[in-house]
Length: 503
Image 1 (cartoon, rainbow, N blue to C red):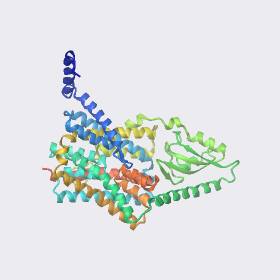
Image 2: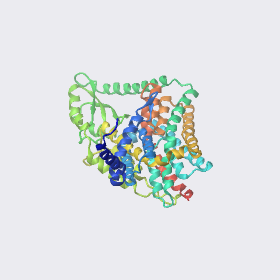
Image 3: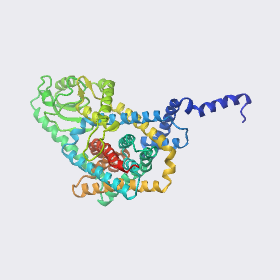
Image 4: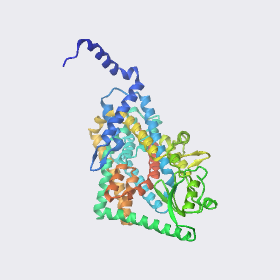
């Protein structure tokens, strides 16, 4: 079918307008391309093979493909989108995990985090050793470490540190994103393969070990609740229990001991759940917005407890934007503070990844500063987080795209891939053997620990499927915050230490 001659000038003008958009309206072109990359990447990430998919990381590879063939993208816009997306991602993660972070460091959490720290340290050592033996560019080593551990915030931290070094060239500044993208998919396969290897080595029945974790949790709950009921034997009427959500601002920050002295509270609190972590009930435990308490008492007492604690679905579903922006601003300020270490020639900084994360963990832990309540509904938190990481992946992919295929289909790309798999597998295998053989750790807990030490959601999804429950999730969220902070800090320290290798 031929195009009418009268329409040819219009078609020509439209094609010219689109082809020149990068020069005439660079910001509009950049935002439009980023939006299309996010669409294509999320469609790619939704494709699953045996229940495992790339998820939002699909945006990274859509960005790489697009960046390889598209017109140049405005660098200033890409830089802003990348940093803003990273800030949103780490801050919302910190808000979600902050309430249960310090509680998770107690008891079993201390041992789990000790193993996770070992994985971080061992992976960093393997990366440095392989970089030296294979004579890899130190900037590429930083990307390998981030990609092999599937830790995006550490990539952002490494890029920010390199950008502040006077000796780094444009080519070296692009290397972390390139090496990260090369090893990232293989790292996911490496983590899952290590879990399967440990399962075979110890001849584990994952389903039985998952049920053992669930049964222990049920026993702990059963012990706590009859004890509470015994304390209420003299209470009038039938004794029952009810889950109540803390949403009243006047209660946020009070300890259970202070709450018990309130004459309006005539029930007992047998359990407190915070960010999917069950906390030990103690007089010094401070309540936070969104805590779910299990109250035991008669109907009248439970109704009074609801009025005192709030239990408002409306309040629970509201997003407080003033605390959100205030926290981000404070996080940026903290991230720029120089930290002087005696063995490094120049100070390191938490950066735009570490600063907001540390502040979010802190304010998420305390829950309230004055009248500001630092709480975000789960759905809103997830939406902001996915939006932020999608922006970051799109910007990184578009920036890395022009040189990606040239690098991956080369001897250097193969070296990166091999080194990345070693960085992924060796520390995980060593930690798994130690935790199972020496500590006798339950496989469901161990699989969540290893997935969390790599901050890898696909591996967690695989572990949950393998054991037939969400038992690995608790270990995952227990080690995730500390692991992320350490990986961010390690990336900056290594960048500063390896600075002497930059020409």
